[in-house]
Image 1 (tube, rainbow, N blue to C red):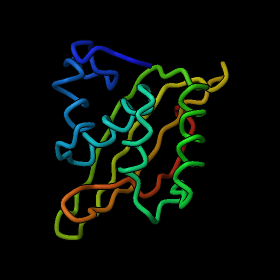
Image 2 (image 1 turned 30 degrees about the horizontal axis):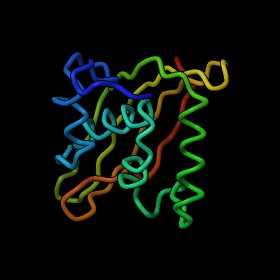
Image 3 (image 1 turned 60 degrees about the horizontal axis):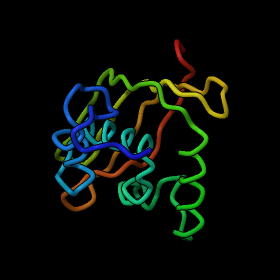
Length: 141
């Protein structure tokens, strides 16, 4: 999906894309809750490069074959209809370089409800945070 930088950001905060997740997509630093929002917006917009760059190399979804991974992500983004994001809470261990963010995503995959609630784990990699893994619960679970 292509959006104008002046359109509302897909993350749902109500700000323009250029003043919200667009800044993070362009390289602005982001704390873990903002990174969740930016990654969600990247899935909505099909910005697979950003998704790949913000995934930690130890993550289960990380692929050494970047071309195959890019294709897999593009296909996923094409098949999904995103309906919203809500961040519930976050925990930050700045000294330990680890963070957790709990959020719910509303989405449909191939027309079927595939929404979920996840508690994501992030690790600091240098001066930026990267997604490592998440524990999933179905909505309301």
